[in-house]
Image (cartoon, rainbow, N blue to C red; front, side, top):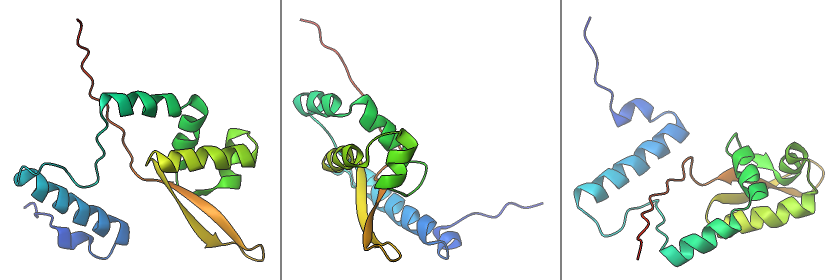
Length: 133
């Protein structure tokens, strides 16, 4: 039994996998070129990191966790988190400013538009070193 080598072309018919493969190739090229900055990453300095952590409250982290399970509306997130939709909307706005989620306006059958929340990344990595003085 021989093993076939997978290529990016194997994913060209799946839009999500195709986009993921495109971004992965772009990231790999930047790594190979030892680029100063990498695409699809965000680096925070120590001061920005402290601010970032102070804004990522437990309630906002819960919304991020819920959003990571699939695209959800503000109302769906509020119901799942047992919170008021207006408070969830404010927290989603903050998560958007932090660069953790994106919000799309989509048609809501017979009710105008609704906001759909989806995560920007599936992983948040923290690499910290503590210097003692």
